[in-house]
Length: 280
Image (cartoon, rainbow, N blue to C red):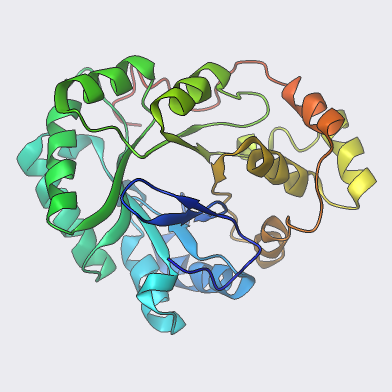
């Protein structure tokens, strides 16, 4: 893709696509509000929108893209296959249903939302994604919330490595070991809940760094993700915060500031454990 917002780095993906490193997530955005919220994100400069079948708001994302006047190639759209749709046939149907709701011929990135090892169908599901990519329904395929053993099994049994693994990552849960595994395998690390649902924003170290740069705490954490190399998808329904979360390309964290944030890692999730999670 080509970026109309030159400040957002574009990261190359194996299939030839480029993913904007900063995107906009719509988790928990009410379906009735989604089109308006995504339109506001487009106005702020975002060109990467992350949704999922489970969010119930794919239609709103599609409506916002259609209404934006943006060329489809200017916008990077991610959606995800939900846990109840694992298995080859069900995953294939689920993708086509997502495309219908989005009113799109393809998505740029399609992810298996969770591995659900209790069902033991994620390899079969992955094979469906491989074929969907070959058919042109998906530009790039990846996974979400996969741990190292899940990734290694996918690769061993199919020979195809996910381009992306979208996982919980924030200063208090930095996933250093998993990110190292990603780097070794050529998988891009993408962070959901990058601000730990706001739980890191009152940390004194982050507050000091924010004051030094005349930024807010959220902007500092997003900047940390970018400099670590993560793709990051903050979410907000507040227009001012949507703008602020995008305004992160006019400052740079020093090595010492990065180290201060690195030292906040507590190894504690705020979300579910991928080894056991099936549904909320």
